[in-house]
Length: 329
Image (tube, rainbow, N blue to C red; front, side):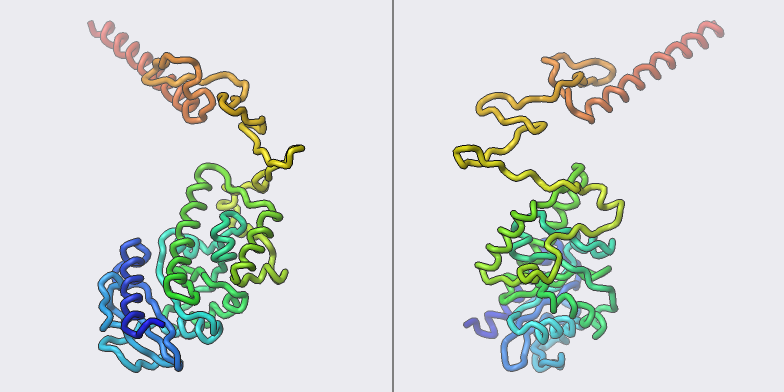
């Protein structure tokens, strides 16, 4: 078992990680660890998480009263204590403002589920707690319903995110996974479509989760298996069609599908849709080639149109200038 000094060093290490990853700025964020006998280590207030020293770490009791430490404890310790009181198996809590995840919290959007296997297994569905003043008892109580639904990672509206687990390393990893997930969601939406996993595949992931001893209310049928929350504008980037599953052939092996639902051909070029090619055009001139450059690209099609308009404008401008010159010649 780690000593108190080692746990303080671990808090400082995680503090540096969340600071260097940009999950906090200035003196933001707070971290705590349960040490037993109704006592907890927690970060001090007014100190950057990237520059803490073990001697800066405070010790508090079950009610948040400071027992030791040269600096005042974090003002948000009540949020941490609420988690410890509700979930006896939790030994560490990490609160930060990871940018991509906090963007969802600021927009008031819960995260969709059933998209990435790692998220389904290690985090599960991520709820959004209502906003309340940081450091208040009301903020601490805002996460109670989600803790009782066995959430280990929670978005805090207009604030950030909080994660908890049996160890501080695991709690920190939840924040890393959460922010990467939110970043992937935003990037995928820009590409034009996000598809959920098929229900059967999600159930397989939940079985793996159960074997690993990780709790999830969906294992008991207490919650909807998959969710797709959000407003109409955000959901325009999501597809209502799940990703296609592999279909086993007579030999029992699964085979995927190629472009446009055509079979892939081993060692041969992928089939392309039969459509009119759109050559790449730069400054009004078509780039010579084999006819495939940009042939199925919306960008190339738009560029060709824009370049043609620019060429016509230039021709018209030149003729106007010539006409004016001849009239004044």
